[in-house]
Length: 528
Image: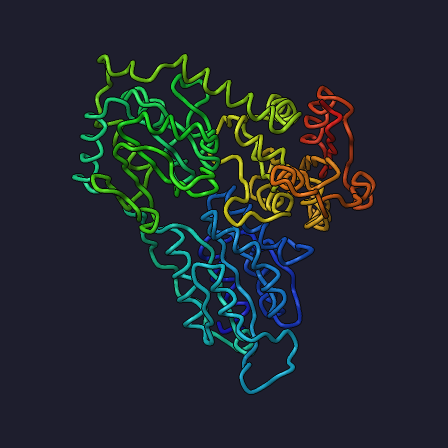
């Protein structure tokens, strides 16, 4: 039966597995809302389109399924571009569906008009396309879901003219079979096996793209005698009790010396980007093997290196099946005592650089449920915590790397909590970042989410202040008058608490997970 295209889009999304849409209705995209309830989809009302985009991002990271947001023409779409840019940096499958004007060249002065909405989306998305008829709309939706399933997942933007959204359309065709991610060939797998067998001192670096293979890591490390690092996104892939595990300390300058000791580095599912290393290169001089879904990541290999496009997790499983356990003297090439001492030294460096942060992070870690999913913001507590906080599970701490947006944690945690009903979800934010997306607290209250919102309030842009001092610049514009965060939380109908010591902080966190709604927990340096 024919229905307006806006309604048919919701039915098409439902048929393709979409359960939740995040967004804000407006006069231009109202037709997109005609079919949401009829299709059986839940809509979560954000307070700002940027929040809707972050919620879709958080939902995707928590559920493993694409996050979807509905946006309005012009400023609504532009408001969400920050979130889409973050999803691009962090390889998150988000589909943004936005209304757009029917014609912009001959007419001026229209509501929400901008010069080129499609081109604006292309600057932060994998692709951004306008579809003027139902056939094109459904084809692009299927293209997006197919690429989410088979390639490096990145956001897509689909713009539909207002008149087309209201015009009658036939239902979408049945969803096609989706392609799968590429796997390494038999010969490629054995090339990796041969290199690992020949290596005297191998080193693995696991990134977020290897998270699905975490169950194979203990056997893989035992079989190869390799030491290992994880990137920030890869935390939880390597169990913390592995004796040759250097942790998530790749950003320590001294980690380059460790990498230089390896005669083989196997980097799985990681870009080894600036925000992983905070230097140009890992530092190894021996051979490198890299496996990633994105061919671009494999550029820059040297003579003798190997790069393969494929699923890192599938390779990890294959390696554990095909490699016999290493029982010869080469297992002693990495010294477990030295690894542990190196980690202690790096922890001490962070304590000196960020006074109080390690103590607070370790206090929170001790009280955090093992299955908690954490969303952090650009804040000193997260910067230090990402290095010293070993996660018990892979894919359970999400941080806005790369694009580095402030205000990410609260709305993203809301999306994550929607995806994981009944499971613990937590946000870690700074006093400044919280003010970027504070109104989304209203959404968390409406949904009744038991969401602890941990706010590190040092009364300043602490990281920028410290950077200015280190650069011999007199600190300027780094102190702002903060509101009463606890009073604001109460005004929204949320819980609020300010612990006086670390023991009280643990108790507050436990209680917040058991509450009937979100709780703002204010933390200050006076805790330590």
